[in-house]
Image (cartoon, rainbow, N blue to C red):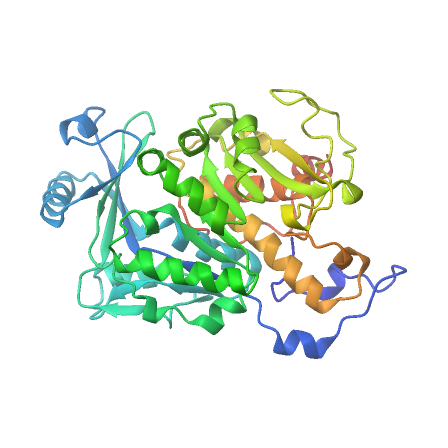
Length: 432
């Protein structure tokens, strides 16, 4: 995926190819292309701990739990003194995804949330700003009198991550700070289940308002589930919320199990498609799955070998571009799966951010769809009301490649885009 970033257009719209429509420059100059995301702004504090640390602190291993500020301060102080704090980074699932989207696309994204009003060099808010791409627009953030939120990531020797969240100002976002016109013109609105944890918190009302605006403007709402325990706790609420508001749902296998009751990833994706139009499911060392809907008239049969798992010939139409179910006269569920890129990096210290990276790739493709539709409105490709620019199969490859880069650099946020050229083995992978 090469656009909507500011790169050389001849690479992607070759003028020598017959049937190409010419671009309309005045549309591009006036039309904005950006992603909007609502986040609980946090600083991630990564700590290496002993195997029994989660149990000793009363934390459920592998889950995300709330810590009061005093307890978080004590744990942080103890681990810092013991030399167990290995890094402090800008964090938050949506924040990571916005940053990665802007790095991949070289395009603007807009962050909505609350941040500490008084920022000093070296404090948590400063660290958040320092580690966020300059392409992420922070001008709409709400200033708060409360301190910055913190997400302490406790990594045990087996690589499992357990999170303890100190809230600070992360839930302070008011509905008054949701810019209606900004949301209406976005390529997508990105939210997370964390925003809906507490129905009495201001950020819950702010998120609900933003989703209502997006729906009225036909802007796709994309939701990442975040943590299995929260989904289990409010399963009925989240199923209803997704069914009513969400076009694209992103989750890992544990979150999918909590939402759908299905441990098999394909069956979980199948169930999720009864709630949303598009489902991204990451399964760690087993790669990722993507499921969607397509009108049978526009279904594109794969040129790859057909595969059967819990669904017979599940990848039959993986060369199709997913559509909204309501836009299909004869809707058909479609799926694609991919194993980790080149088997995954040789040394993975933890998997923090891999799913956010995959979602950023999908959102880039969705943004590219709007870009291409505006730039070449009469293109035959734009006569089909698809959600994405590329097919399920191609999006899987792109998302998988971005996840690999996140894992390889040991950071939830990309420090650079993908390599301009791949070596011969990687090129063979892309051509497969």
